[in-house]
Image (cartoon, rainbow, N blue to C red):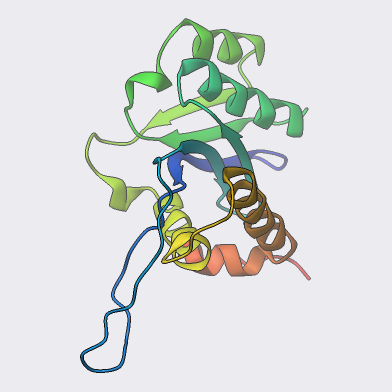
Length: 179
């Protein structure tokens, strides 16, 4: 990569109002009760992680269709007005269509999409960040409203954008950030 080029891994993740459940310690013979909402409302996160700087670009949307995927790519192009932007992601249907292609064409050769093999999430380090997000924000936690959940989710990513070394550690990048 040349100076000024950036490399992102990108993917989508679910943000469900239903709390994600995991094993918990509790006193012997007592079951921990986790409240749940009446309806399983859901939003989607579309995100990209810069593998060299640890910075994230996250969008929260009601859907994760081709249009929303194109919005994520456009956000990356807008963020980096010069240099080549490499984006590695899976082979989801939403990653290939006219709307995505329009963003690629509009970037005039500065946006290069790289496709990971199908059914191989272990090759995409963003999966580790999404796992960390769930563990810290949604595991066994019921929010008053979907808006409160989305605020907590945005706060998580805003906080981690202030400490990119932590993101690099989570995703397994061993790239050193200059002091």
